[in-house]
Image (tube, rainbow, N blue to C red; front, side, top):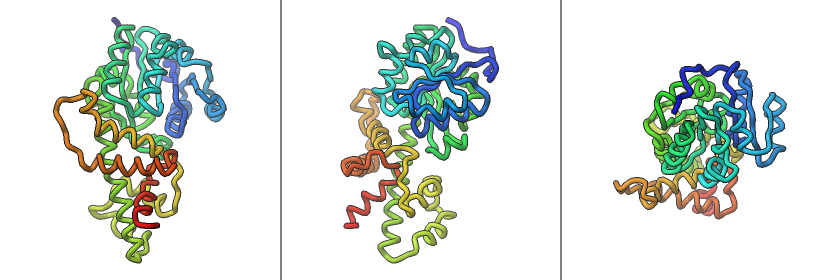
Length: 306
């Protein structure tokens, strides 16, 4: 079986495919187009692709069609079951991927599925990298995402020119480790969102000027990237999604349930994750699944009778 390198990544010779053009995926794909790469895309809702087409992207009718005319294919989907269908399904793009090509799954998905896709890709003389990202819509737009890459280290290094357009990549080890890193990341993000939500609700309840309060604490130990990304949005009641609440709920669920899935025999007790999952479940039950994760503050407000 061959390897995709030493042929270097370059706009003039590397054909890129993209599947999944929601809030995050569209912004990431747009950056690659702006960097000069030719992009072939598939969209289950073709009308969502008009902006990317206006930048030069070519829309095709199936994931398999994307694979057949791409050297590197990115996916940014919603749930692990979506990834399985798009990649490994009967008309999935793995069946059309050319030898020595690479698929990069940036979806927040399950480590076991990442390992399964890596093995399936190697059987076809291809490569798979699990490279979920963190940074929300702003990070995607500005090319400042944190990228956790699992798979073959040489392949990840070869892909660096593409990753650098999107953000900062860290190679974290064998297949599946990228997804494990993202789950750990989401555990920390969830805890920060909860702390920020409760701090703001408390500050308002006791009569503080919440904007003044945030300005006062942001430079101290309470400050965080979550505060920078979502503090003003929470205060201004801006719940437009950079990442959907239902997706963070999915990620937290993988953190809680990963042992039950046989992912790791070392049991980790995570009471904070369990509480965050319960609160985000409440948010989804309230009909707010498609709000941004900063909408968690509405759950805390409801608990307090607001």
